[in-house]
Length: 163
Image (cartoon, rainbow, N blue to C red; front, side, top):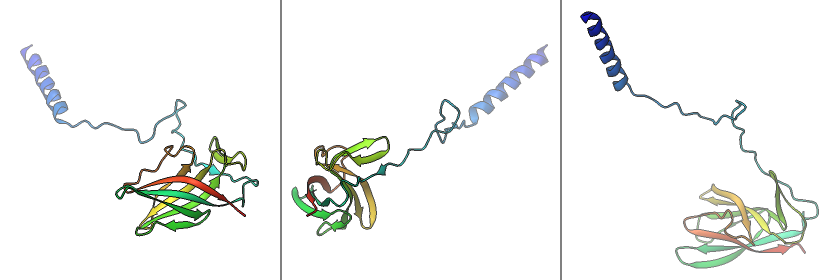
């Protein structure tokens, strides 16, 4: 009987020693599973649709650029589809699209009309040739999804119709 107790005690000590010394690794899932057992769907890319009633009707946008360190603001006119380099910097603003009456329906971004009721410009900001931001500037809601650059602030302040 003693030998059985010793054997069990020894086995228990070995089991405790082995489990205490071994490092447990957490198995972290690489993807969230859906309730249906499938991998989580990937985020759908938004599609920008410029209606025919808007195409060619707008020439440029005016973007206020605030130099945070100098506490100065300058307004630059950037033609839609072109780019502008901020003077004395390596920062380039590209204006991809302007939607005068911005609206979102699912993943489709478009304009309900050609009236400037919710003006928005889709821009890209490049620094030293690398894209650091791609998003929207809203003239009525300048802080909505605002790009937080360490040196500059960007605001859509006006838009110029095509002649």
